[in-house]
Image (cartoon, rainbow, N blue to C red; front, side, top):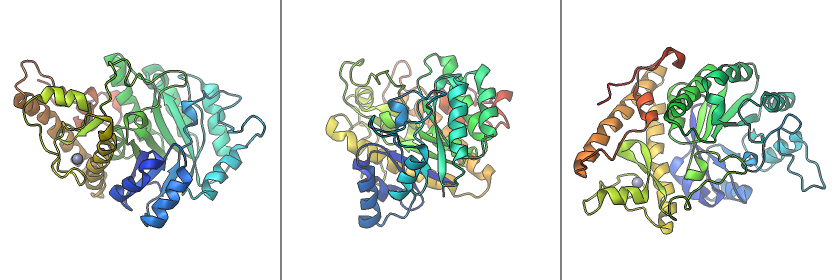
Length: 368
Ligand SMILES: [Zn+2]
């Protein structure tokens, strides 16, 4: 059911539109208010045939502990068991159940073991163990132990990356660590992420889900604020997936860089030639989300089309290399004195040669 699929991780309010874009080859992971009703509408009104999952996003609100790895979801009066939580999702129409795992702080092996034991103990084949992992887990000293624990867990797993790796070196650790996780751990999917999900699937990971908005592309640890719209002077523009660049750029940043010059039109199934620099206001958020889904859905289809693992990796590598080249082209087109479009670290890794294990080092294209 999961295998070879790229899901859209979306709010229930977007579900119908997103379902229409991803089609039966994709799937939906719904998180937010009223997901069951939204799922039913997708089935009944859109005749959507792809799988639908519900993500309770327990990790946004609570940290997992050894004693309580899962959100019991009670209102304080009633304890609900893990078995009841997962059965509830199946009864509500989910094709598989995601465990309501709390946020797993780096190096908290007690909580990690408890979560694994809880999910394995259910002995059901329709349960996926959610693993909302802090970025700290991907550091060189921890990643091997993490892989060791997860590789022994006989249950389907969905890793959801959380927190932020601020320093450039840690950013690279994060990219390489995620690649190792999804290639060295069997039966693992990468959920609630950005285009890293496509890289994961290209490397042979079970499945991925890509968030439709910034908030659904990376988990913010409980107690921390996303900083969106405050630290940056109240910028309300959405993150926009720029097809040529294979990366998300804030709408206001795009508008600023292009200024009076014409920005490239978007030819995705949603935009009909709309300028890529035209997503600025709150009214544009939904358009930006659906544009993003339309763009990566096409990549996901092309990526999954070849049967051979090598064919898939080759397609993805070429897409990433073209995107690196496009950054230079964009800099020329805006006549920037200094490069303003700079490929993110992840793009260099994705465009690099295949490596059996990332520990052996990644060969990336020669940088300018
Ligand atoms: Zn578009």
